[in-house]
Length: 562
Image: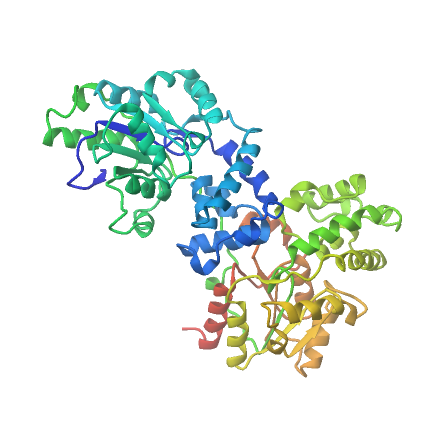
């Protein structure tokens, strides 16, 4: 049954959000978002992302972090398909209207390639809207969509028969600002010559829609077509901006109108019972993303006496410099004789690896999807391309280093509280070190530059790629670190890293392998990259998705089993 406020009046008009409420345009929207987000750097928007400490929710903070590092949507958002681009831009830019405007404009450029893929969000939407019209409720649409897109989608959805349903439509380019600015609602009411008061309902599917309704002074009706859990919805709102009603479907919307009609018999020209269509099923919740099951909650590990960390994409973010150097490096591969030394497709670990090798061999560059994903390091790239050919990998690392000198220097903590975790480990009496395939000239600069003050004092040992003859995935660097600490290489030494290379190195060194899943791979993908076969036997002992999970894991081992 619909939840609603006792003070909610019967509507004279219903103004609807478009995407996620009346129609489903997720395919086009997410295609455009995935094309637009890699442009954040050239748009000057990376530095304008909201600081995580100022984000409204923990989920928003994680989204900002993920987009800052990987320039794409968090995999859970892509899997669940429950949020809009407006929600995303408001979450990651906050009150920075100029940044949001730049982002919306860039999105629109991308959306032009995809829009037109539109279908009713819920079965029977046309029939329910028709019933509302028969009750003499005026209908309108207010959306952050541009006019060119809305008009095309109105002509397309349900073979165009929705066009006659709406008495007014207002789009983003009809007003001066995007939602949550209330003008998209007030302009629609102005067109209809109706008062801006609680008898006007704004029906939308997002937090931003309800904030917009509140600012406009109308009744916000939250349409829960995405099937959010009730406690999740409650967590978004204060008593001041809470919706006037929450409905899970258009059938529940009709139930709500029927309740109001009993209290106000003259409210509608026709009673809801006389005009409502046969019941249509409510939307079904998207299939949840399959989370990793090598989780801290289900493992028992030895308390760490030493924790060694990978550097890039574990403790810090240096992805921009790395990918710029990789782009510059690949055109040299043919002159270096490296094209012919790449693995044959049948020797690759996964079909994805084979496709990466084939693309680099043919085009001397990374596949655009690999670059867009920003989830694979140069060490992993070289492992995929050359396998056990140490000479080829050595030549590739040298070529990479030449170009990295032109780009390195910008280094950020991977998460805001990494330093706190490192200091906390020291307080527990755990020795802390860094293992990186980075050459020492780069690592020492970055170590001194991170967070302005540097992290040099936080580590008791560090081993770089050029300190040993063989880099990861060989265990030499890890074994050298243990030797420098005068500590045996055993499972009480944890190695925390974000790549298959890190896991292989830890297992070969006889240490505990903690896979840092900052890239948020799901379980099916982890099963692919860690197949546990005779040829590729190495698997992590545990997977952590962020440093809060890692810290909880350490503390659980500190306390011991219950």
